[in-house]
Length: 310
Image (tube, rainbow, N blue to C red):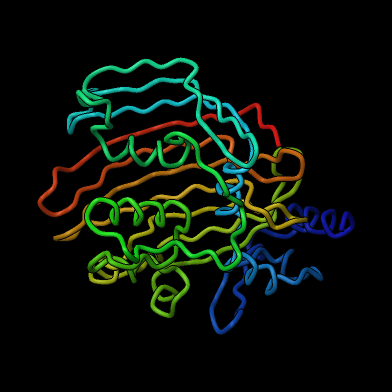
């Protein structure tokens, strides 16, 4: 592997610029690769298939259910002019004892109408954040198994269904989300229609003292007016560990305007390892979303996770 890494990096720096990129066909679809990757003995077809079927991103978040950690939490709710309506700052600790987890609020500060008079969240952004990182009371019997686990909106309706759809957007960007009129199918970056709309590129790079594959998906530059109307993913870039193929980081931008849904979301996630387990360490979110007959909500948050313990 070290020899392959050396050859790849030398190839990137030594090949003429005009020869750096080439197109290859994998499973009847076109991908762009640097010439050094194509000429290496790297099984890029297998790598691309593993990327398409990746579950490490979702598993990293499920792993947060079975460990202890601390978190700095920041949420801001701006109005349409960018002025701050409400904020939330806190430090929390997740404890896990006898297979059950609880959240301890070490310190907390809020401004504006972040909570209502009963202490409930006034904003869906806050509810989504709490669903990711906080518990209500004690939660037991969880695991981080993703095989056979499917995110679904089945049995949910109203706001609960909407929140589940947002989770699916968050954990499975680039996958179909059921139940969203006019949009759900357009989120699938791996169906036949998507390959006519997006460019797919695989690179091999130096990344934070090691090496990584970076896989990017962007809309084609020569799309017509009606084709651009089918674009939901403005950009998605994922860094994969070259050895384990685990997700190291992911940035993605989603946007769409239709009669029922209207959203513009920008997210960044960075991962780390604790005792061999992959977990998220930093999450940044900024976006807005609206549903027919409901007021558009704008929000942003940053979660900084640390002090992980198995």
